[in-house]
Image (cartoon, rainbow, N blue to C red):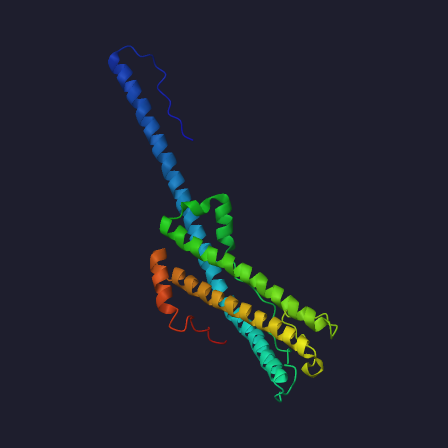
Amino acid sequence: MLEAHAPHEPIHSWKGFLIHIAAIAIGLLLALGLEQTVEALHHAHQRSDLEQQMRAVLLNDLQSDKRLLQDLQLRRRYFSDLLNAINARLQNRPQRPSTPDAKQMGSLLIFPSLAPLDVAKLNGTAALLPADRIQLFNRIDTLLGILSATFRETYSEFDMVSSFHERYLDSRETLESGEGVKGPSLDVLSVPELLEYRALAATAAKTLDALMDGIRLFDLEARQILAGIPTEDALIQRIRTDWGKEGRVPDPPAE
């Protein structure tokens, strides 16, 4: 903090007094201006750092989400095959194998993150961003919160299916980690057991559908933010255009 000091010689006239006051005022204005300039440069540096960190984390999220969606699709295919097998068994239609293969379930699921924004909200740096950027980042952050809840719900449904399997086959493997959890043979299950199994599999399948659509929406918003879309309204309009008539964007290409 710069301080302005008046000259130490004695004042003997009104002219000297006015010069003295003017010197103090000019010194204070210069000190204040310099302080504000330094603060503005510091804030600009903080904003630039946050923008760079957000760009890096969104690019990383888009890359990891390609693998995440592929792994989720493997799990979804397993539950689809399981539902078809259960329905065939209930209707006494031939279905072989009677229990779908759960060996290829993908890998451990890695969820997207907005860690730089979380830190920026805690230390107040996020408030330095322009209003339009704050709205855009808050929008995708809110979506990530919804995704987190859906992710937990999906894991809960996996747990319920795994618990059903555990009644018949003791195993340390889990659906959450992508391990192949082999279920019981459908041929030995009673009709009530088959109906319970079908309900569990159907619920897990629909939570997976909701999770995958949420991740696709997150990726769409991330790509638009990275492309420099200016406002939240423009983002919403672009989502309505790109989401398509089928209610979803295409899956990313397989690597």
